[in-house]
Length: 187
Image 1 (spheres, helix red, strand yellow):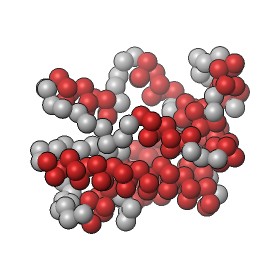
Image 2 (cartoon, one colour):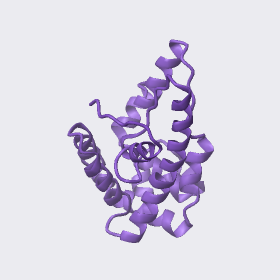
Image 3 (cartoon, helix red, strand yellow):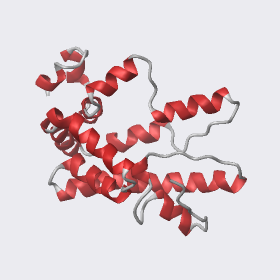
Image 4 (cartoon, one colour):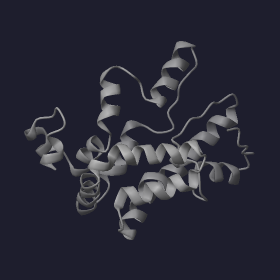
């Protein structure tokens, strides 16, 4: 970890205080993306949030920050370490891996994206892949689809979620369809 961590402007003492999941989320972001963020370029979700607020459109999160942090913090420490190891082991390939993820998205292959996420998260460890995907997507998809359904029931909602939350029988789209909403692909 320390060899990979040397590429970041974070003191070693700080790295040593981080939980394994926190270190993992930092080094899983390519340097180019970190540079863009450092230069003030917003990630897509923040662009949508900013534009909505600029136009006086109310913004409601489907999750709270505490919900998102609990996803990783709830992993047993041994699993956090295994996930961190996977990110460290593939760190030299992170730009190519990110490009591969974008290719799935642009090809509209959300099922392929979902499979890719599972492989990249936990390598060949099928048990850890399942645990990771359940915590990162399945459990959150249930909560997000329930909150989204409530907002859509009020009418006039625009809802954005990460592409990994969309596909599969446990994806937000299937869950909303099961609640009686008509789901139509527009892109």
